[in-house]
Image 1 (cartoon, rainbow, N blue to C red):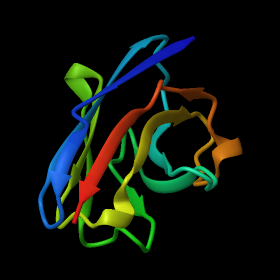
Image 2 (tube, rainbow, N blue to C red):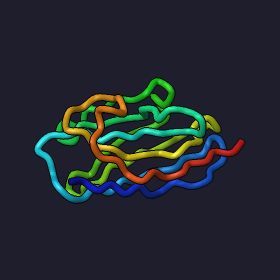
Image 3 (tube, rainbow, N blue to C red):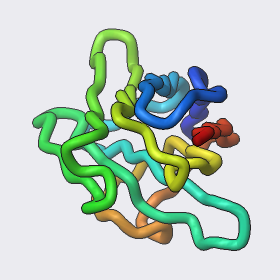
Image 4 (cartoon, rainbow, N blue to C red):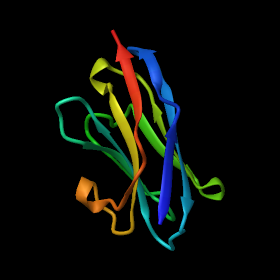
Length: 122
């Protein structure tokens, strides 16, 4: 069992930056992947970024590539999403998730945080 808690969301103007944090607790795994997803009203939950916990290998959605950076602190069991050059279309609830299998699809992930709101104003 894994518990995930997001923090760091809020309201920011277009062009600004925010950093989201996700604290993981509970069972640890020898190999797993942590990801960030987001969901705007009326839209499906979509992949944003993921990172392999051990290797640090990352992947990003095309919509955020070059603007967002995912990272982790192994000692603290934390994963971060640095969001730069934010756009109004980035407005969504952001979710932290973990999978033992890897992948970028929602069904690939086994545990989810409660979500945290990010609102980008114009």
